[in-house]
Amino acid sequence: MSGVTTWDDLLSAALVGTSRRTFALDQLAIPGAERVEADSAEAAVLAGAALAAGYRRAGWTPPTWRGTPPPPAAPDDRPECSPAAAQLLEIMLNRGIRVEGGPELLVLHWLTTARDAGQRPPYRMIVDLLRFGTANTATRPLTRHAIGPRGAWLARHNPVWSWAATVPPQDVVERFATGTRADRIALLGDLRATEPDFARTLIEDTWGDEQAATRASLLDCLHIGLSTNDEPLLEQALDDRAATVRAAAAALLDRLPESARGQRMAARAMRLNKKRATFELPDEPDQEARRDGISDHREPGYGRAASWLVQILAATPLSTWDTELIPEADPEVLIGWTKAALRQRDQEWLTALAEHQPGPELIAALTPEAATAILDRQKKLDARFGGLLAAAPGPWPPRFSTDIVNRLRAAKADNVLQLAAAAFAEHLHPSALAAVEAWLLTADPDRKATRRILRGIAHALTVRATILQEFQ
Image 1 (cartoon, rainbow, N blue to C red):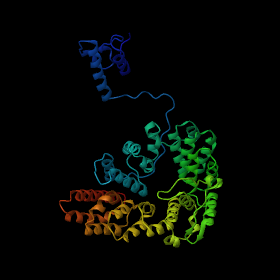
Image 2: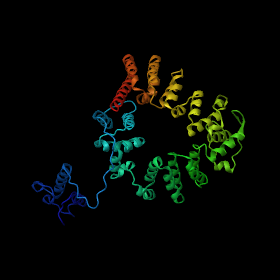
Image 3: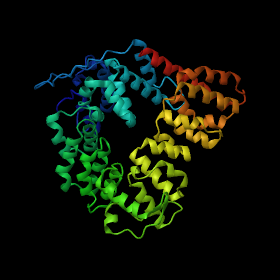
Image 4: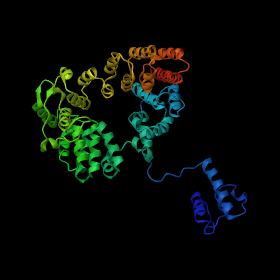
């Protein structure tokens, strides 16, 4: 048989055996291989593998490009960040900083601050950022912005990084038609952020040929950039033969209170409204109500009729009612209004409901200013408060940040600190660093968990303050 000259040939010889494929070290295309001695064919293969492996690691000459080379990446006009900011990002990406909540929170803070400042990381860090975004899917929008056009160009040449690649306009339709479900959904997500109507057209063009699971997944993509322009497709989906598709359409229409379905739900709710916040329980839903998404799903602790009322109120435009009715409402009515406020993202109703009966889900849906104002008025610093604090979005205002640290310290509310440790590291304003350090200095030496958490929070605040300083 012919001599072995390449790594692939050497691998083949090892797999099929030296009895079927002869091998001599002097046939290996590596300088000096002919001077290595081996006392058997098997030993020669092993020695050749050791030589070839080292040779491959020592250097590689890329093949000559054949055909038309790809066009270069589009220019990136953003200025590069400072060397100190780049060094800090590199340390965080390599997990060289340990803080409460993990270094990913600090990387997100870095990426957000860089975006707001209109700056970019050095080009040498694009690969590290692509790896970071691949491992942390929730960070991909910010990561994609950070790497810019050069990172998008590079991502086109590695399937693992396809989430960051920019699909050329002329390839969008073909990619959507031939890609895997995951690729198509990722493509739709990108398009909905920039060209929502075009993205919806892609769904409409293939709707009749899709399987039910795919139709439901494609509809879910419409939550990005959702508008009344999507209503005709969603109304069509209410008649779909698959329950999953109908449920997906109803969930999206819940977020469009001005839609025709919202008005139909409002009419049903008004027929049940007897006086102010008093409602009678509905009868068995008719065919039209079933089409609009009223199901037999039961709210925990409630019967069928009460659960139907919750569903109707949750899909009714909140403009139908007045927030002053909240204190008079029965529990099932409050549940329906709360669901409606969360789905319609109505800040007036969210604030009023949270002031009446604060809960983590309501607090998380508020603006940082509204959430911290409500938390500021809470008197009991117990585990329930810790859950609310952990849910509060950030960044927290400077005064609240310092005050909450001092309140917990004075009350010795270590349990609250432990429950909200990650939120403190992520959302406290850097001006609260002095208050955190003061608590750490006076903390009981026996409370090792508390001291560890405070050190982590102080470290995170120091890093975040440095990030802000570098991008000023």
